[in-house]
Length: 179
Image 1 (cartoon, rainbow, N blue to C red):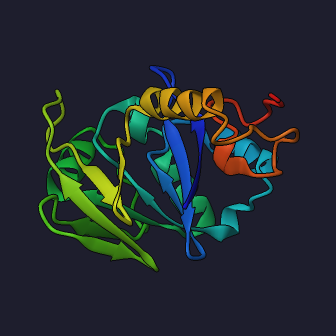
Image 2: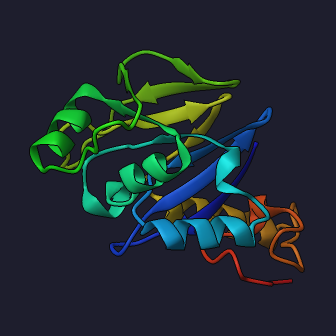
C-alpha cells in the first residue's frame, strides 16, 4: 500500500492511497484545481482515481469531493449519515455517482478492502478504516506523518529525493524533496 497526504489541516484534508492498482482519495477538502495539481505532482492523473471516500461531512474533508467527482466521473463513497448531512447543506451534486457504505461492515472499492471502526468525533457519522490490515486514521494525517518520521529516524525508510519517486513517503507537501 502506498499513500501520500495531499493536504492536512483545517483548510483541507485529502489523502491518496493506492493498493493493488486501486487509487483512492480519502477525503477531498481541496478545490478541484488544487486537488488536480497535487495529484499531478505525484505523477497521478485524475482518471486514475477509482473513488473518493468521505470520512465525514466537515468542509475540510468534503468540500471538493463532489466537484472532483463530477469533473472526473468518480464515485463518492460515504455513509448514510454523512450523505444526509451533506445533502442538508446542499453539498451533494446531482449526477455524481454515490455509493452508500455501512460504517460497521467491511466493503471493497475495486481491489481495496476497507474495514470501518468507530471513534468519537463531532461528526454525524464518522468513518474510520483499516485497509489491508493496516490501521489508517483517515482524518489524522498528522499521525501518519509522525509514524513516517519515526520510521525515518530508525532508518526503516528513506524519504524520496524527487516528488514522485515513491509518493508513499512524500508526506504532507507533495512537492517536498526531503532526504
